[in-house]
Image (tube, rainbow, N blue to C red; front, side, top):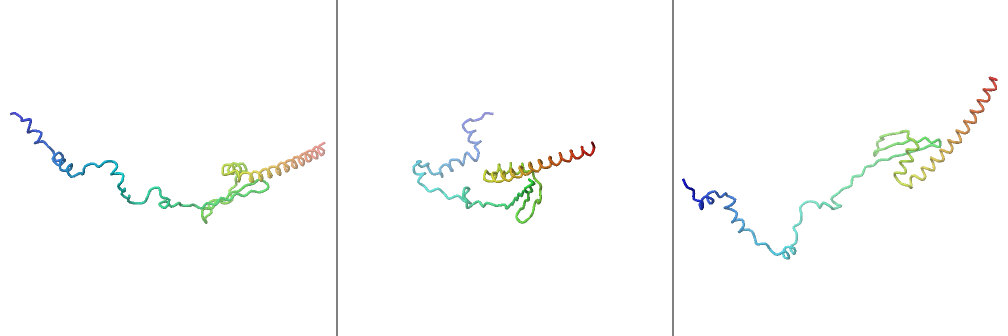
Amino acid sequence: MSLDTTTAPQEQATDEETSAPAVAAAEPKETPTEERTEEAPKPKRGRPKNSSAARKTRTVELTLTVTGTADGEWQAELKHGSTWVVRGLAIAAAAVSRAAKELHEDLSSPIDEVINEAREQQKAKVAQLEAELEQAKQALAELDG
């Protein structure tokens, strides 16, 4: 059996190959670049991606209250909206100082002043207690001796 090479490819043609010329004929010829740029671009559907009106900023109300005493004792309270999350949480003065420095210099300066004042008061108290302790040791030595 012999195969005719001129008719075989035509018999094996697919639907895509036969319809391609019809599609190509329906497409308009390519226009020069200048004419395409003058046409107005089609408006896109939906919201613009970078529009500030398209985004709504959700705010969260958290209130952190930090209180300190002259003795250097600090407490923190956290409120989320109208609900208390934490109340009366004891925190170290050093932690308050570090947090204030991380937040802003305008916050850290007054807080450090309060902490330094409390430190000086505690040093004075320690010196007074050491003096009282020394007097108590002398009184005990006189009683023993």
